[in-house]
Image (cartoon, rainbow, N blue to C red):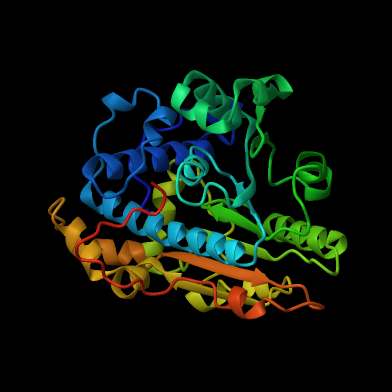
Amino acid sequence: MLPPSAQPISRRERTQDADAAIRQTDSDAALARLSAVRKGYLTDSFIGHLVPRSQLQPPRPPLINVGTFVRSYSIDHLVEEWINISKQEHKPCQIVSLGAGSDTRFWRIATGPYKDHSRVYAELDFPEVTVKKAMSIRKSSQLGAVLGPPETVSLAQGGMALHSPKYHLLPCDLRKPPSEVLPSLLGEILSPSSPTLLLFECVLVYMSPEASSNLIQWFVDYFDSNSVSSNPGVLGVIVYEMFGLQDSFGQVMMNNLRSRNVSLIGAFPYPTIQTLPERFMRHSFTVSKALTLREIREKFIPKSELMRISTLEMLDEVEELNLVLDHYAITWGVKLDPVSNSSSAAWTQWGIRMVPDMPDERESRWE
C-alpha cells in the first residue's frame, strides 16, 4: 500500500548497497501483514516467524491494515482459483514467486485444504533476502516441520538457498539476463507440462521495462519450447503493483519513495488500468485483465467480509484510502498452448469474481 514510514537509509548504506532500500520495502510489507493479522483482518500463523522481534512491533494505521487486507484477499482468491482449476484438470500445479521476500503463502497452502494439489513452490529473491529467510526457516520448528522430514531439507549455496521435496528458496537478481540466471535455478525444478503460476508482488515496478519484459519472455519461451504437445502446460501470472502515477497523488507516492532512495522505474509505461494487461498480451498471452484495488474492494469482496473488518478499527481516512487503492492494481493473465486448447474454457474464465456472502461463516482460504 502507500509506503509506510520506515527508518531512512543512511548515505553510507546507499553507497555500499544500492538495493537496500528496495529490500526494505519487503520488511514494510511483512510488518503490515503482521499488523493486519494481529488486528484480525487476516489469518496467518506463520508471519510472526519471519519478522524479527515480531512481539515488539507496533501496529500499523487502519489505512495500511485495510489496504493489506484487500491486497491479500485478491491474490489469495486468484491463487485458490488457479489451484482449483488445476485440481479439476488432474494436474498438480507449480507456483513460482518472484521477489517473494517474507511471503508465507507456501506454508499457508501446505497446511490448508490444497496441500496435496501442488507439485513445486519456488521462491526467488535477492541473496541477502533468501539467506535471512533460510535462517528463519531453520530456526523455526513450525516453519521447518511443514517442509518435510529433516533429512529431505537441505541448505545450498552457502546458506542462501534451501531445498525440500516441494519448496525451493533460490537466490538471484531478477534484473540480470534471465538466460544467464534461471536455467540453472529452475531447469531441474519446473515441469513444462504442469500448470505454472508466476507471482509478482511489487517486483516488476522496481525493474526497468526491458528487464521485466525479458523476464516474462523467458518463461514464455521455456514453456513454448519445452512443453509436450500432447500434454502442454498452462502459464499464468499475477501482478500486484502501483500504476497511474502521473497524477498529483501518484507524484506524492513517488516522492515519498524517492526520499527513501526507491525509484519506480517500471511504472512509467502503465498510466492507466487499461494498459496493464497489454504487458502480457505483447507476450502472446491468451487473455489478461486488471482491476484496481478500489474496484475489488467495492465490487468483489463479500459485504459480510467488509462489514466484519469495519468493526475491527475506526477508519477515518476513507478518501485517502480510495486514492491509494486507485493507484494499486491486480493484473492476471493466462497463456494457453496454441495447438491444444481442450481446457481453454476453464483457464480463460479464471479471475477475480464475486464470492457469495456467507454471513454465518468467516472465510479462511488457507487454514
